[in-house]
Length: 466
Image (cartoon, rainbow, N blue to C red; front, side, top):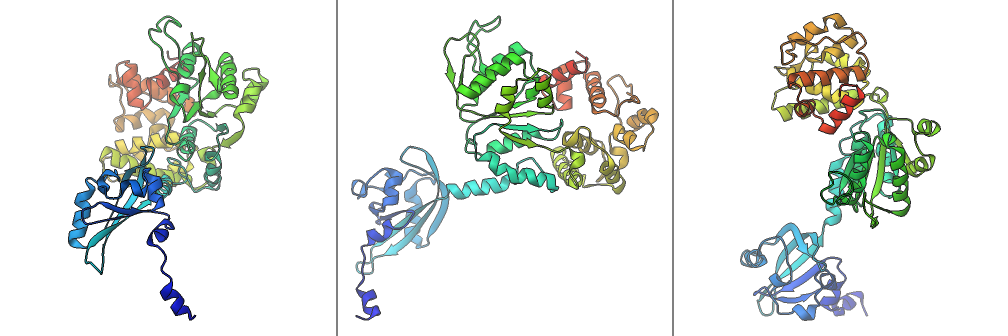
């Protein structure tokens, strides 16, 4: 038999063809009642084709497109196919992103119209787009070789539940990397919770991490869930893990091993499923040798390790970050600042950034605030940066601050001492300035500095200002 005759006599069943398509497909009549649907749509809705035959499709396909009948009738009237994206409720009542296409067809024998409905699951494509929008790591920028190594490692960190230890100097972006790992992981739909282990006293920190029962201590008037419980299913990031007191190190080790713990004052264990990421700017090995950090806990935390390089070791990234922060703050403050002057760029390019990316961010924020035109000039940079660059003698920094309008609430101008080259001295001076500007209000000073109250309290204690 000739091949053309074989093709002409081959008439497979329509439903068999539809069942071979990996999308949900339904055929509905002019009254929008379901005539047939394929196996994929049966699995999606939980109904068999026999059950829904003759039933309005609006009662079967629960979607976010509004009333389906209005959309479908318009397609029947105009003869123009329609395609839209939205959610549909699946068998388990979970929303599934779908591309919904309705195409009119005509029965040539009887002239009756019908619609072919195709539902395509686009959840995978949305996830890919979301990760593309995130970039290598949301919030982390850089094209230096050391940062490219971090970006290449990110998928490895994201596709495992093993503990991650992020090391690096203060201000390098450890918390941003931790959140990027969480967002790229399968736990991204659940909470990401950050706890600073150095911000609270031991007694309060234990309650913060593991919760307490009513009456566990003075002031415990009600049961309280700890951060581990609140992070259930997600990720908890313990920053400054090197400051965790030894008794809590034991309890944390138990949580990592057993996935359960006793809240303060409770005799009932709580089971948790969380991923742990930790961060520190301190040398944990040195702390282990000094007896200040448990060696067994160090090994449990140091399963996967990432070191974020200081900004001074990230060749070429300073200019990229300057442009990013300049655009961000110009848009945030509604200012027309467009660029930095060449001399200002040279000053920032030679600065050593003891506070790393966080310090650079603060410098650009300062410059955008001070600048009154479109170009940030050298005089718009913070005085301590100019002093470090040798543009302004330290003894004359007060005059530079006066010209920039940087005064305290009482009209006095603070002079940076000769030993202010360290970031600690600079931060201490910023705290004192903020407190003077707000009349001693810690809440106001924290807001002025862009910190949380606990961060300000911790730094004041660190610099012996509290």
